[in-house]
Image (cartoon, rainbow, N blue to C red):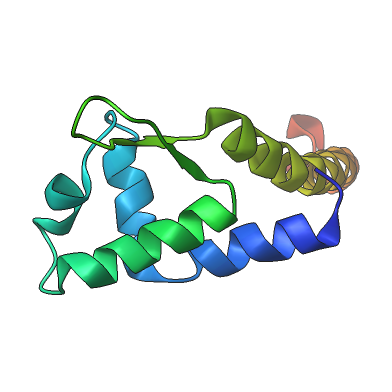
Length: 118
C-alpha cells in the first residue's frame, strides 16, 4: 500500500475511538450492526455510519447471509497498513541496534579492568 490517499483514508478512519473499538471487536469474528452497537451509547444509525467509513477505507467488508449483513475485517488491508508501519519500525530498530553496539563497545573500552582497580 503506497498510495497516500489509501493511507490517509485508513488512518483517518482509525483516528476515531469508536471505529477502533469496532475493529477490535471484529478481530474476534464477524458481527452485525446490532452486535457492534451494543457496547456504545450511540444510535445504531451512528454505528452504521462508522461502519460505512471503515468500509470506504476498505478496513471492513459486508456480506449477505439471508437477512443478516455481517461485517468482517479485511485482513489484507490491515496487513498492508502493518507492512507500511513496519518498514519504518524496522529502520528505527536497526538504528537502535547500531547505537547499542556502539555504546557496548565504548563501555567495554572505558571500563576499568580488575588489575587496574587494585
